[in-house]
Image (cartoon, rainbow, N blue to C red):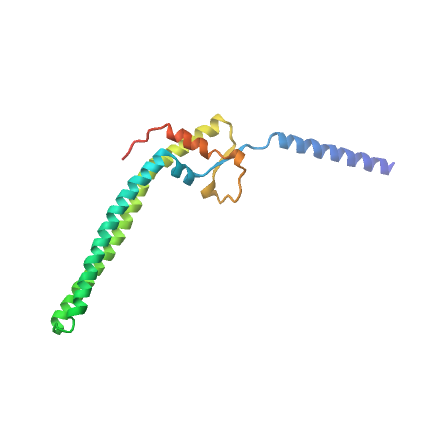
Length: 179
């Protein structure tokens, strides 16, 4: 009798586990993913922003190179005339050279800050639109969760649930106002 009760209990437990597992599988969450970097690299808006940024970066790089050449010329001139100059003149030229170097370093710091600000200004409206598209897709296609692959620390994602291409296509349909 005890044995029969144990077998019945085990069978009931087994059926309970199977029905619970089957019910869970039927209601598995729908999870999607997208890669923001890929969207920015492949979309028209992202490519335009990148080109605009590249143009500004090249302009600043040219200015940096010009300042670098001026510094090198002044340094070479000082090195050549160092022995011919008296101590007062040599000290004056050395201070001028140090000032040029400080101004160059300040220029580089300001240029980097300017480029960071420009990058944010160019990309912010695009990222806002991408997030708007993803939210809309999430609601319309009944996703429970959509993860941005680059920020989420995702190591693997099934490509069946990758909506990156769809996001790029939707973003390309939108005109994003430029600041």
